[in-house]
Length: 163
Length: 408
Image (cartoon, rainbow over all chains, first blue to last red; front, side, top):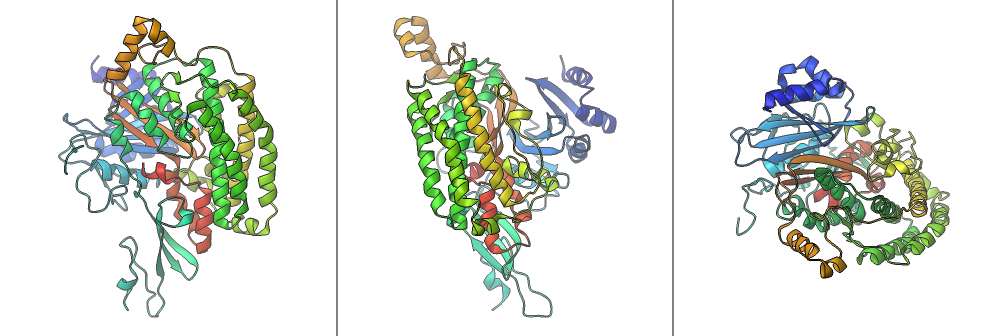
């Protein structure tokens, strides 16, 4: 099954899901891919639309941003998969939004205007992966010292020897 | 002297009121301050005694656990998880094991689930006891610490009994728990549960009527429900702000749906309420432990998955097959089907989540921990601004901060 087919099947199966329904109503073409695996729903969103998508799912009842993190799929491109875990306290459901970012221009819009809690999470992703968040109020390193070079959680970061 | 002389940190600059000599002061608190519970550094901007800004500076304990996990087999990650939140090691073990079990789609035997719940609730009591002792000590009530650590020691002895280690037990395994608990384990837990309610009365007796304790806590560090949700606060501080949310009840894991317990909620939102809720939570945990003890089912402690779960020592000495499985698991691990899962549990501090990504090999491609106090720390500024400097200490205590899990 190719990805377009998989996307359509998953979206059809979960058309009742409030996150899917609201995103389909607002930005149907921005849902790049979708997956339902081990009872967890993952939606891949086009990079430029993540802030709007975050706002849409928040308004649909997914009110709690649990976490923002990143996975480095080096050496394949687009390399970074920024992952947002969002929880609905009223629906008792979770949804995962993902954005693929390439290594030439590792930048994605910050969702701090939607959820202030994204502040620390995005700083952590910036610090450890080097993905920049456009419009972040305070994009500084958070774990590593300010003068540190490199981003330790990248897969091509040396794990032994002198840096 | 100009403003730059006051700038002890590049994080904030003092501000000068236009047309006067008045300027605010930037104060450095930590990283070696006893009430920051570790190595938290706060840079505070104060006007007299009033706090205007709070900027947390973290990362002093960063050890790159997430990176280390990528170089280990799945089963080798378990001891690392203990060291993240060192006050609730069993919760970390459970959360990681549940995440990998979800990836493997393993069925865990009911007895192992009950034992896990029992140990997790003991962990919660133990963690809250440390919180209560240190929080009271920050406020100036030194006595409580001695009482809470007396009972905590009993719980740690039980942990030592069951796992061989007081704190970093690593007792849970992917697919169950590592060993049969010792013969007197249930009796010791029962003895502890018998005395615990009156001990909690004793702590409350020491604190509740104390006018200093009341005035230092009541009305301090207010956080509204909307702010708590927006800032990612979970656990007792979220419930103290009036949000009725507990993962044990609302999204049950590890068989929590079989237990009856109340989730204490209040909408006052101050430090005092967080104290009251944690005390009630301890009482509820005692009840859950009692239910787990009474309803402990019979059966195995490990899942029936020879390729994942290490065989018994006895079988290894008599059965060739077990010896081979043992050799293979220890030397090359076990492959986990590709995919990613996010598993969250209600740790003593709030929502603890493990995000595990597998690429189909025996080592996790990525392990990420979502830690409750890392998020709650962001709410510190909202809770402290406009209050007195001394209240900052009370507020830090009330979010039950553990730097090991913030910095990872």
